[in-house]
Length: 385
Image (cartoon, rainbow, N blue to C red):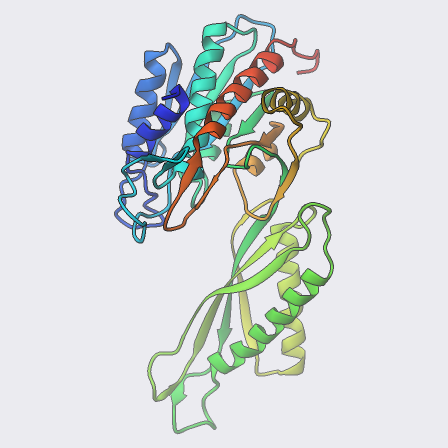
């Protein structure tokens, strides 16, 4: 069994379900301990970041000989839940060139490959530092990578989220918002006194659907296409015989480069103002929630060209470009001033009842990451770095 695939099997066997997704779940403590021990055995300088107890991120540093550029590998080791998985999700099964198990594809495949590549880079004693960041919580709010960028810098980074051995240079962001529609509570027999907040909320839902159609009709990015919006959760009312005083609608807006949480809030306020102008009895409040920016990097950025060349050599063909509709920690790294690109293994079944990684792609990924580190970290830092 190849080293990266062997390590992947060990990682899959460790329960690391994100407790912010599944209350009471194991979290990242056990897998953090494993990764820290693995890196320490190989001589890495190991740091444990644990602002939230039981939710550690592990950073291993292979100090360079000096004078070269530094490179960070970043990957998350938390997973979604185990319920509904077809079989034992923590029993890594090898079959027909695939390794099956929860997190095998998303994204312990990338974590295993980057750890092996970093260990090879350490043995090679490159000029620049190689930093391997195994992070918590990407599946929820990404506080793990936020902790990492608050403490560590690098001249570039590679996020090893699964990308089918293709180069992801852009992905969408998102903004979560809550719309609180107000009514007036009254006995169900007194329409003269009550204002139905749920019925009023229907006007916003109709406008939301129209907003989504407008967004999709005008794609704004060549790789990512159009933004989108949908209602995620709705709650209102207190009993059968009363007019509901309040209805809460939680929405998600997926954003393309050039769109921000602030611009989304302005779009929503404009929609609410239009409804209020047509119906003076309509009252609603916007509560902005979590928002994460979209990501994009230029095709000619040094880390992109170096990785692309290494991949073409190992794979025998130049990898395709990708833009992803989902969000990743690339955006946090980029916002911290660290140029990054996403490149990961092949497989399928992310968040699904059956999940797998293609074993050959995991081996190839480890090779490509190592070759990229060799080329990138052996190059001298620029004078203004």
